[in-house]
Image (cartoon, rainbow, N blue to C red; front, top):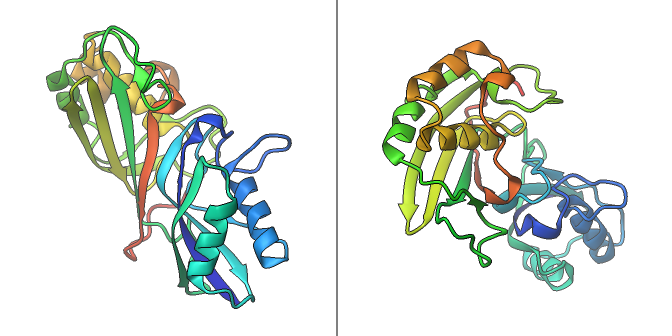
Length: 252
């Protein structure tokens, strides 16, 4: 039995997230249905991250098993010829049977993009959060210092999050700006449901002067979701990559 790992890129605008849902188009559903046509057998696909509706990815990792001897380039080309334009396979490789895209992952990199011009951008409406108020990067960077390291991020998780523990390690959050687009590159060992979007919403409030950097430390210590900021909308979020270096994260 072969196990194949895929690197998947997708535009989540018209998709209802990664995970299969009855009556809704999702990345998992499209992959499973297309693989079933290529391989001529049912093919469950497991992903590294259950991205929400509207969220994008350039480095989602997914795996499936098959006994078919189709070469890797044939699987990749076959999928790309049949998948909708919003989904593409960047890479296909064989991996050991004990590899798991989610539980073998040791870190993830997410990018959140914010459009900061007062006027909206029709061209970037599906790729950024339009935040017409000016954002000051200095206070945002100061607030970030309180978030780096291993902490209890209970205040930054969505209702309904089923994680066994809210301890997470944030390795870095980099703030950058190109023109009117401000980006937050967030790297960590694992993330709670909506954690990056809540971090983005909270840091934006700091950048807009609605909160002080010191208040972010208080929010973190409170472990209370109601103390944190707005959950930034999904279209600004992108899963950039998933890391596998042998050092397992805390239980998720």
